[in-house]
Image (cartoon, rainbow, N blue to C red; front, top):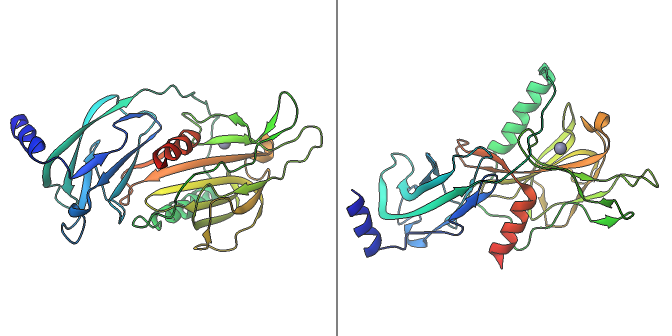
Length: 288
Ligand SMILES: [Zn+2]
């Protein structure tokens, strides 16, 4: 079998390309299927890796979120028919998952309330209804808060709590200790569509989720004011979508912007929060 694979691969090695074959835990793997393997030439092409099948966007691009606890080592990427998993080409590529040392945040005991459970359903639905075929993001990604120096020790927009196990995003400082002001303009990190405007959720407070297409979503929590008005509304990168605040769990912990990025496969079988700042840096490098 190995011989067959090698023969096939050497004869024809152009059905897809892995853009970053070495990928860390908490990062995103990017694969591009060649146009001649996309519909209508092939029906239901998908990428098989890590035990899942990933349906590409309409440009043949696949984004695979790598969980923080992903198994380390080498895996094989192949092109298969989504439904039955039949190999479409003999091409294969190796990818290697390498370790990343993210912190572990220990959470206190938590008892879900009926309200909290209903909120989970609205959030899941927003992710389910994303546009997995289009890619709205384009060009450079930006950070959601402007970085403003307050004094030698503090900067608005600085990471105050890092991404890691038990914390599926980062917290960014919004409070100026001198003035006590904390409501800052929050910007969409790239173009997309509003997927959810959540009001007064138990944990998230006021939250906006932006669907960037292709299974990429950005999440902004604890907001004081919405500057988008409806689900489906188009935003551009840099548009101010809200003012930061101290709603939800930030009522206790203090004002900050919680910012997450989720990478999800169309069928929802892969659904991963990744390191948001790492994602921005990596995507900006791929664009160059
Ligand atoms: Zn947070």
